[in-house]
Image (cartoon, rainbow, N blue to C red; front, side):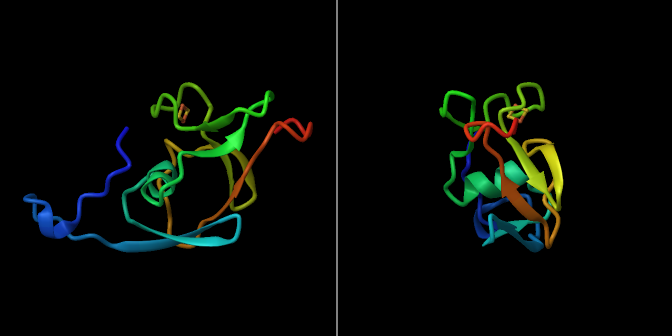
Length: 104
Ligand code: FES
């Protein structure tokens, strides 16, 4: 999956981007309507946003909702797959980790 964001000026399809804003652990990020949360995270330069039980970094692996490597908490709802959830303006995303033993 490419994190590259094709700018509207270079896109021959004539699309018009509608901007949105989310926060990730309190940090504001901008995206465009239609992007998944994983898309917004990757377009911001993030490759990993949680850690597995061994402490290894996790982000997008399958990109199709199968592997559960991309889990985040969204607006207080845990275990949301970032690759399958479209970002909505105002979403508050919190990263999760299983390293601290809390089962996340
Ligand atoms: S990357 Fe595999 S479920 Fe999201």
